[in-house]
Amino acid sequence: MMKRKVFVLTGNTGTGKTTVANYLQDFYEMPRVITHTTRLPRDGEMDQVDYYFESTESFQHNHYLETVTYDGQQYGSSWEGLERAWEKNPLITIVLDTAGAVTYADALGSEAVIIYLTVSQPNELMHRLERRGDNVDEMKQRLASSEFQRDNVLPVELQGKATIIVNDDWEATRDRINEIVQAKIEVEE
Ligand SMILES: Nc1ncnc2c1ncn2[C@@H]1O[C@H](COP(=O)(O)OP(=O)(O)OP(=O)(O)O)[C@@H](O)[C@H]1O
Ligand SMILES: Nc1nc2c(ncn2[C@@H]2O[C@H](COP(=O)(O)O)[C@@H](O)[C@H]2O)c(=O)[nH]1
Image (cartoon, rainbow, N blue to C red; front, top):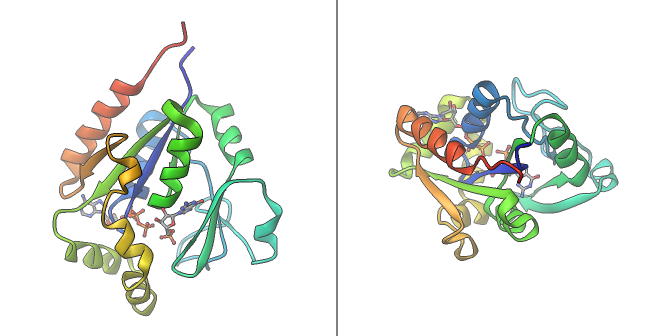
């Protein structure tokens, strides 16, 4: 029996966290923990697939492992969501901001494999968000947020715990991700 692990994909907006989670879903059948948010869906995003989209009131009615405020909106991951994903597969993923990743590292220890994504050219993030089709005003507001500044660097609490991937080139990132998955698979005694 394989030991359970949650691959925590963290880093700034636009660095490729969701792209990596989708890759791990497609090639390793790792379910992603769906988290809760009060922000509105982007074009093409679906309730219960991309997020559980909540009102400020309904957001309160879950049992959270952690919650954060990011660019003025609330986000949270529930214990139930984590257990539901683990029921499907011992290897699962979650996409979190860096504050959430710190909480996961503390709460779950070696069950949490923290991967911090970044890019070598900071301007590239804006171009990627534009290409993704983000609303321009919302994107500018996000890039001016304190959370954006904070997530540009790996938090001290994750130094020595997180693997850093500079996601400039998708093929290189995919190879690194494959190596990390192989290294982290553990079988129960
Ligand atoms: N190596 C890469 N080269 C070029 N574009 C990339 C690369 N990796 C991801 N992208 C693209 O960049 C955009 C942002 O990626 P993604 O949505 O995965 O980021 P994210 O970290 O999940 O962002 P957010 O936190 O805002 O949801 C997407 O359009 C994605 O296709
Ligand atoms: N700590 C948490 N961070 C979360 C959660 N769900 C998503 N996120 C992160 O928030 C920002 C913004 O997300 P976006 O979809 O609006 O671009 C990003 O860094 C996500 O990874 C959560 O439950 N907890």
